[in-house]
Image (cartoon, rainbow, N blue to C red):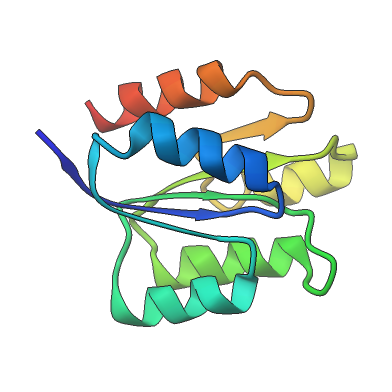
Length: 120
């Protein structure tokens, strides 16, 4: 059984490639980008069931991106993959109904395994 859709928004291209390759058979549609503005355009046309995002973007505020993702997709499973967070930022992210936060260095296999558990 395939699940509806996965959106990956992260500045780490190797993370995008690894997650896409590992999960492409589990989702009917996978969209991936390093550009937050492009991700928001994807969201205008589709509600994604699962979203993986980061907080590390050169031109955009990561917390604001998470708020927008959540606002546009309130029922999506939302995971955050990011560089180490200070406690204040972590608490702000946790208050946005995030399923899980992964801080670098992270284990890509753990992320993939957790996503598979969430969608089953």
